[in-house]
Image (cartoon, rainbow, N blue to C red; front, side):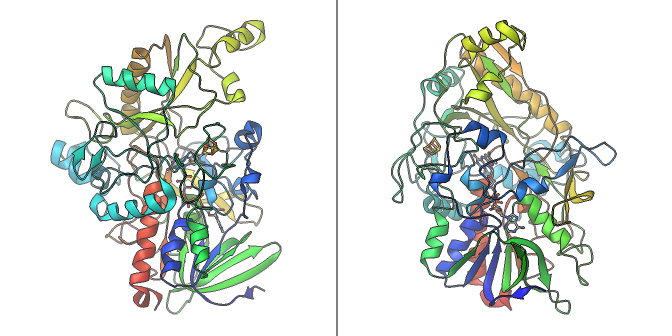
Length: 569
Ligand SMILES: Cc1cc2nc3c(=O)[nH]c(=O)nc-3n(C[C@H](O)[C@H](O)[C@H](O)COP(=O)(O)OP(=O)(O)OC[C@H]3O[C@@H](n4cnc5c(N)ncnc54)[C@H](O)[C@@H]3O)c2cc1C
Ligand code: SF4
């Protein structure tokens, strides 16, 4: 039988990028908060520049919860399962995946909040792809802007403004939405190669810029600046220059004296009062013991797959199909970012990519969102072209031979020796939309070690994603060739397996028939249950999600503090 703990004001499930930010406004407002985190504390000493450990063995997970519940995937309801991924991309630990992510920290564009109305206004309603369930967000960019500002300061973001209160500056991204103030830190420095790519983009008439990153370019909050040493992709930062919530917002919340972190706490259920239908707290397993943490309010922040799974697993009399799922919307409107259709260029000279990090790069936004005229095109949206610095030995030796050498033997070795530092793969994030037949549910056959079903992803890219993918590959090919690439190889489409950028499943919107949470992130059906993370987002834009996830988390927590009595009951 579960041991019942002392009641708290708010229980937060998961202390990653979202939960780790949400706890700060709550504790500053004087609420007692318990954070239930499946992983443990990690220190800079836990992180090493070790490609095998970080990129192939699924470390640094303090525990392997995520790896034991990797979602299964099938492209559609009639297709066979895809091979199951060996490791989960996400991290268990205080700080969650913000410990080992790339830390690119983008704001969305105004267009991303209003895809339906903007497309309809400019091109007509028929341009919304058939079968897509995309909706406008319940509010626009202006509503989230103040929260972007707060989070950029509290977490620590480097970058260069390209649109300060409507005044454009070509040193930054002129396509970005208006910002009220400059970034807290200047951008990360460029490299010889990213400078070359930037100059080339200018010659093409495009607008290159250094991207924003949650990485210190100068000393910030008593932590040092980045050492640009590399091994940063899926590697934690040994000097704390990468601004994980583990050493940015979480310690600040602890300093209030109102925050109790319970580590190695694996939440298995969110409990409800069967008479009122309100949440009463959460059940978790720590070691071999079970506990019940009572709380007036529960905030769910376990990343998209776990947010959806925990709701689907938490069945009760008032919620026979899963918590907050009487309208049947939990798991719906799921999508993951389209980062397939990549492009690799081979250059006839070394590009010195053996140091540096993926957030240190040059971006081009001319072809993102609706920054260009789609009248003569057959898709909506677009992509962000991102060229960055990052090279590790195993990845380098696994390079394509571009059809110029066999993939074994002496000739292969000679080719790799000559070309290991002569190629670059661009990262192209493209608009992806939700569709009626892309969704998450509980796998009927595959279970985790506690005997609970894992998430099953049923999803694939559709026509709009394919067309924008091909279009963006064309633009990237043009950029690489203009910069001197002698060969360019275009990557395949791929499908929508477990993703680091997973959205939807508990979408936010005013209409409770098509959305799980309201405009403030609280459940339409369970007033004292809030949800933090990409699972509430209905569109992705052309850029990584985390800063938006964190701004939304702050906004939800802020709303809770200002409406405590009505929400907590
Ligand atoms: C290699 C990599 C690179 C990335 N690069 C970028 C980037 O450059 N920019 C960007 O914007 N995004 C990036 N991302 C994505 C980014 O990491 C996520 O958007 C972000 O971490 C999501 O925040 P979250 O809080 O929802 O999830 P997480 O940060 O994963 O946190 C979830 C937390 O919940 C805990 N948890 C899960 N289940 C339970 C449970 N049942 N009980 C208790 N605790 C639980 C987990 O242990 C974890 O700590 C990257 C991701 C990866 C893997
Ligand atoms: S490259 Fe910079 S941010 Fe990345 S691990 Fe090294 S010092 Fe930290």
